[in-house]
Image (cartoon, rainbow, N blue to C red; front, side):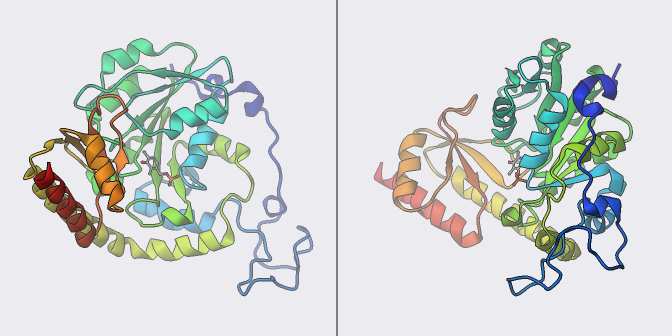
Length: 351
Ligand SMILES: *Cc1c(COP(=O)(O)O)cnc(C)c1O
């Protein structure tokens, strides 16, 4: 049986969090002499002399209806990296507990656990990058605190079967995090609608991919109000700057622009796939539900270096599980993709 109170590290359950000036008085009007701010203004052109809202309520009020959740079910972080780190710190006792990851997958889950001296168990995805549900369930024990699933997965690009994810969420009493960084490219696959049914489910999304805001550093974590309240206790108080919050508030008016960019990128992806398939040294292009194509070449190392010499940079994934001779290619503009495929055609003609 899932019990949040037995899963959370005991000393964090009883932790008294830092109480900021804005925690103790959250009104908008008044003479603010409580936070040792500079009352005169800022050395910069813009005015940043006041501390920002520690809980970013204005953003969450706008975001919640877009996502079909309540504002209290949202934590915003400095990229997804921040909630990934906070989740490990909330649930995993160093040297005692471990996380479960399913390679090939995103690297930060492992790095965050390593930083905290938390153990890592690995259960590979199947050769077609799906979940081996019995193997996952067999690997779970009392010290497994978090299972990290990535859907659509990085670097393979595909969504994981929804029924498999739900089976894992239902069969375990640990936290199951589904990282949906690429979900805007496959919106029908989101698990956000399942949050109220499963108290052990956590969903991560990001503004870094489809929204085009990688440089702004904003990640989203969605979970039960209880889990979000605990994460709020351990996050740094003012984790999103005023300028970040202002830009984000404006970006949230741009849903239609985001959706248009997604449509363009998906169109480019299918054009790139068709062109790549005509090349003699392309063996396989794995099915993608995101803005990346995992491509298996007959000789990925030579292709990788040829592209690099010509200043086209792709990601070498040939050393990771199930990805021998594979390069991961992010979908570019039509011109960028043509530059890539022209080079690949020239390389193949030379060989
Ligand atoms: C790109 C990516 C992220 C996003 O990280 P940010 O810190 O939000 O930029 C998260 N998870 C996966 C799997 C990714 O590929």
